[in-house]
Length: 98
Image 1 (tube, rainbow, N blue to C red):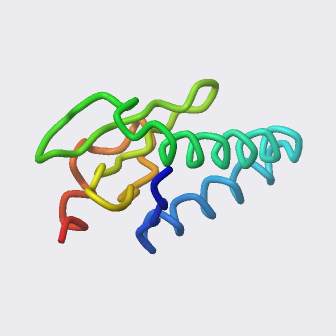
Image 2 (image 1 turned 45 degrees about the vertical axis):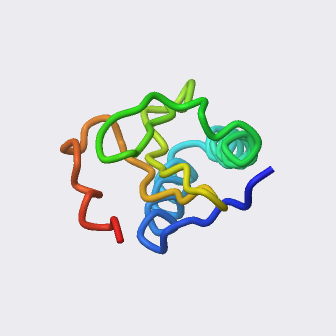
Image 3 (image 1 turned 90 degrees about the vertical axis):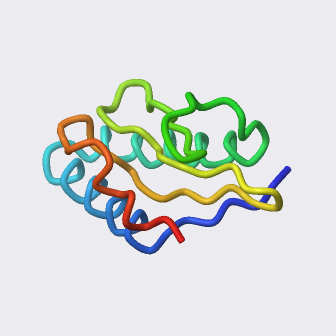
């Protein structure tokens, strides 16, 4: 299992999404948080599970929620760059590549 590192901007996206969901429905927010935790762990165990997109990045769609986890499967870790809402412009997170 590879360690998973989450970009600070992605952390902010996760917090923002959870906060917005909590205002609408606390149970849905809890489900979102649990699902997100499960998917982050899954990416550490099976980093090739996502769909290849561009520049060596992968995208993993969250079922039940309109988000994709955008990440890089690096040699020694998985680096999550974004929690991208389906309505956001594709590639806004490219500037986070190092």
